[in-house]
Length: 360
Ligand SMILES: Nc1ncnc2c1ncn2[C@@H]1O[C@H](COP(=O)(O)OP(=O)(O)OP(=O)(O)O)[C@@H](O)[C@H]1O
Ligand SMILES: [Mg+2]
Image 1 (cartoon, rainbow, N blue to C red):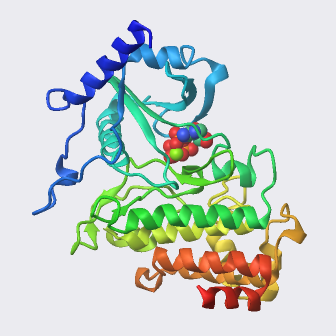
Image 2 (cartoon, rainbow, N blue to C red; image 1 turned 30 degrees about the horizontal axis):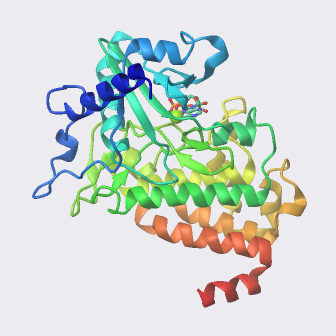
């Protein structure tokens, strides 16, 4: 290895081992103060720390060619790190009035995501906190976000089995968050939605954006807050009316995403008239009616890719996820199992699928 490379590598390793003196290496703050529990160890080598210069170099000074999209936090650019790794770089661009909020989201994202490791969660490669500049550096997801594939710029229209694969992947990611297996504490994502489901080159779904995530220590199944956070169209009605956040709030949002997969419509479509804007208001009453269900299936989806049996099972599951009463919604592990069964029903027929599942 050439000397300069070795020295740069050692420098980066040193910067990691100097965690205790670097204020930008996030330590367990209030989010991790769980009684009688040691903070969980980082699973990977930890996040890399970048300078502003490195971010500029990776993105050709944030050129238009590298621009991927824009969200509430700021613009996202494709970048190539010095190591040659292709990444997505999210640049915090918030007005002064929202700076504190952005800073909090940035810290939560780094704190939580750097401790998680699952094939259905986007990995955080590192971050940059250089002066006032804030960047989050993620693994690059070649196929972008799910919403664009359903009703935006996606290159191919997704057939039913691909949609089921995406639903299963996203459900597995949520299952990992909701179980305590990740950091010994269940985590509510709080911003689960189709733009936060990213797809890799094989259309494997990965959940992104943990800035609003909340840890739910055992015995604290509910977190009460006066400030309701999330995205319009995906809000759990129980959370918005009482301020009580639970794991089941994510299940509601998951149900809305299932409806997007089924219908190809947006959760909220402001281009429609007032009574047709909300996907739930449009379809809720027909989800358990097999005959009328045909009318809401995404017309862009190839007819040969689905069986009505699997569509009906999927719609039933979605309708249970979006129940007003959170205690009537299924747990995410049940959603994973049901979606796997639906996938088999679609490819092999009901009796064959039931047989396979009994054998397992
Ligand atoms: N890791 C990534 N790989 C590839 N593209 C990404 C990645 N992360 C984000 N993007 C793209 O960047 C765009 C903006 O993402 P961002 O998460 O900032 O906003 P959003 O999820 O659309 O909205 P919001 O800010 O309300 O959550 C999205 O269109 C997404 O496809
Ligand atoms: Mg997002």
